[in-house]
Length: 154
Image 1 (cartoon, rainbow, N blue to C red):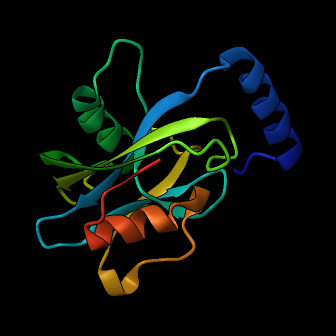
Image 2: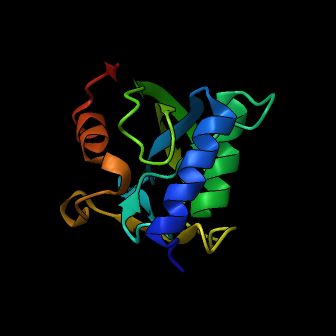
Image 3: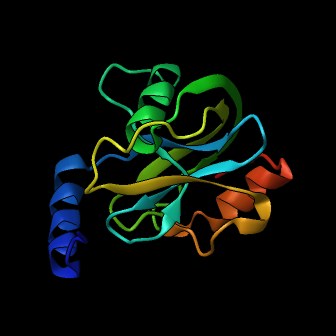
């Protein structure tokens, strides 16, 4: 089920007035022990993306990392990796002004379906040769930099 563009625009405008502050979240450059990358297929766009989400009130990035990986991709965190970047351009996310922290992690293969099947349609592992493009929400440059080991912040 995809969200109609008109409804999406209304929701975005309501959130913009309610929040009036950037939303802090993260995406995860999540690799399995054999080196495959875990991606999720989003329900709103139908496109693939890095798994992640927003922090809950009172939650640290370390606490949110395993929770979001399980909720979105059905994977278990095996080890947290490095901070790869921080993206804060207000135009990057069409839904709201997001400050997105990019983390790396080693994870299990997906062993459960996503917890919200409307938000996340599926999770799958990809070899580097199989990576889909374009990624949802302008994540192509984030993935390119993560794969190259480049640190980035804006």
